[in-house]
Length: 222
Ligand code: DC
Image (tube, rainbow, N blue to C red; front, side, top):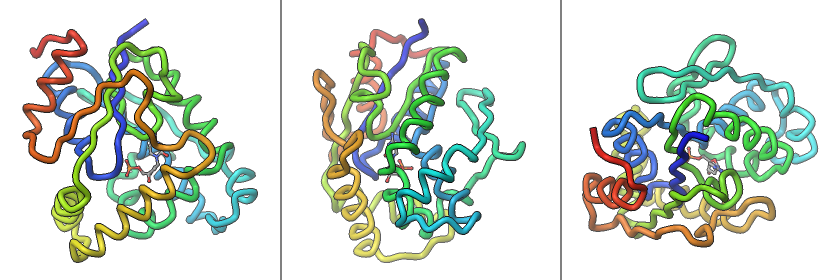
């Protein structure tokens, strides 16, 4: 079986940047699990499904079809033959993705998709339940944490680059709200997986976090 590096943590803790950098430095494929929950949310909103109605979301979820393709160092998701890009990164999706991802039927479908991906190669997967639920047997599991003010600053800068203008305070409120829903949901809540290595990224550079992960995973940089 191919190697699976699991990186969990709250929004803005640096999971995505770190996982991409791990992929770039090693040839391991980058997998963004949150994007799959965002695709579910996007499709549900497009179909007019009320995202605050778990039964309606559960009934709709099996209709969502995603194809998986290797593009460079990452696994790309195609919906109707196309990558959704920033259409799944809007404030509207941010506001609706936590209730959608709390629906057990949605989680079962996304977990099933994710468990097939090691067929494509060694992967580094970032998310909320990757080391705790999706691949609990992986030997390389990490939990990234970071001070909420620093997380909000990072996310605000990232979102501004995509043209979404919000204050740092608005971004912080949205992050903390999602943390609360993600950590308190019944199915696969965000938590430190048992046995995972915890890394506080508040004062670390991306290179320092990547070095810790590669070292602990026994993976050599290219
Ligand atoms: O990482 P992100 O912000 O793109 O994730 C979007 C949402 O998806 C997040 O609020 C929680 C959910 N999510 C999840 O429940 N489990 C995962 N493995 C990844 C994301």
